[in-house]
Image (cartoon, rainbow, N blue to C red; front, side, top):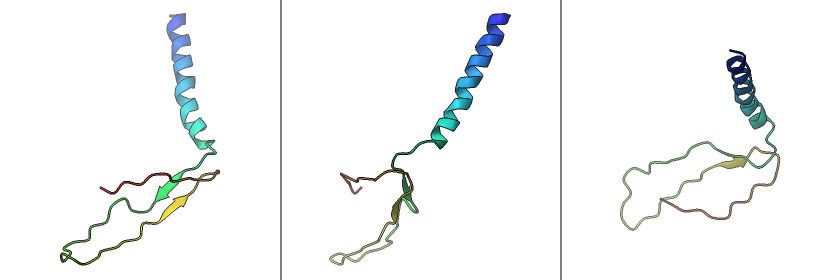
Amino acid sequence: MKRIILLSMVIGIFLSAGPLAALDYKGPRVEVKELRYDFGKVVQGTQAAHVFEIRNVGGEQLVIEKIQPS
């Protein structure tokens, strides 16, 4: 019975420490207002463009090294 109580306490400590550690993260963190954009119907041969706003809301420099369109 004591082992079960002790094990429950240890598991509770680990589960509650996870969210606290996430709040203390100091690295770069990306914030994107919209992940997709629908251009609708585009006439062949014309150009379509859209600007995605990407912000670094973290505490360190954000470096984007590779982007792949889908």
